[in-house]
Image (cartoon, rainbow, N blue to C red; front, side):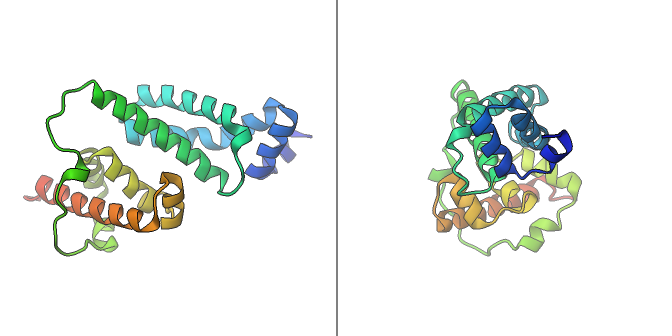
Length: 191
């Protein structure tokens, strides 16, 4: 098959052809489609281009080894995102284990009662402030907000990827939005 025709194939066709033939050209096309996106996610989660470069290579090795387990029940991009997310969260957890942390995990903090933060309120934050606020949030809150608002993933897609119920995802988004607002207000209270 000529390279132009291969590039025009869908993700699921490339996966099927790779599994069937083990021809690296099909995997190379998938790599070229997703390497930049995976690297970008790794940078945003790990906050280090060096770590993101290593993570991207490890993630694609996992994808290659697990390719035969892709069932097609979700989009290939969602499957890759799930592997990327889980890998980066594992890296973050390992780093945290090596540090002495005295604060309570977020799940143990009492939920604050109050107004729910609207999507419009989040989207009105200046881009320069957005990066600063996200960098000051814990990784699980940051990730769920990025999935919802940057990647445009639906509640169902997020639930599937994180292996949670839809109501649990909605609650995590609500809490993350509240923490975003608190962090923003605290950081930029004089702006």
